[in-house]
Image (tube, rainbow, N blue to C red; front, side, top):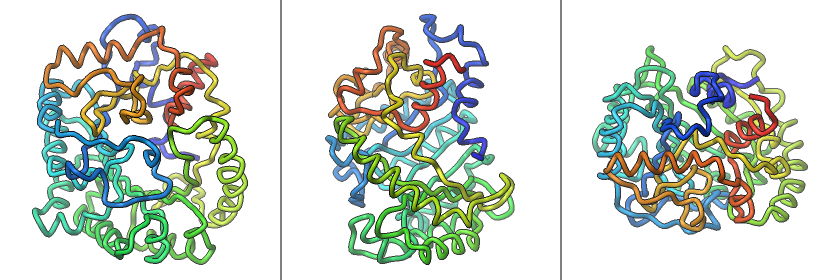
Length: 369
């Protein structure tokens, strides 16, 4: 069972009104979501150094283009219904423009998602009331905050995130703060992600984090194991998959199995995300329709085909520069809907589909949409 927000093929079909004739017809169709990878604090992309960060082996360049991005959103006037603030390698809470972007999103009644390590919520609330503003902006469970916690105690968090300071306690403080501020209105949705590894996967630690998240009353808790790093040859990724995603993943699945939710109505909804959704063996198709689902403003200031290849390492995926010229952006959207684009161009460069793109593209290429 997957919550509605994780049923990617259904979301994709709804966005194109269940009409495949809209695909590759040389008509400007805005994607379902715009991913905005705000460039950290402008000098550092992130305040953590996670060993499994998908951008770890890539160029992690940052630029200063935030004002152009804001102007672009203003000109789009809500045409792209979802704005997702995160990053292949950048932490959005570090960026001083994040709240302005969230306000722009809600100005046009769009929905937002924030993908973050969660370390700065408490500090930002104390500094400028960020969390209070965030909660006031949220209008439904379509607005969400996804926090990559990936640990159940201070020690394993330091090992997993490659830090020496106790950020775990700060993250828990921030989660608690968000839950308290949203109160009975119960949104934005608060989703916790837990990537299991050798440091954080003992039965005792899993039991502890489940108990803690239940006590905090978050909306969901997703367990999975990390992808291999982006930018590697598929042969290497396959070896990692056999050693970690499959072998280690089976052990992890059994560890979390006693805590998995039996109905979608449970809070938190606790679920296991299978490695099947990150299998490079399934990336053997040529047609990519993910461009109708999303497009990305990369942290370096380029516009990319998708979030998975949003690094200058993947020069083939650059559509142009982030711009405040709506006509230029529209041309990039149309270019991303190129029927002659061959997805193997990405695969040969070590770029891979994320779980959303893999599910949608697999269904489309098999005629299953």
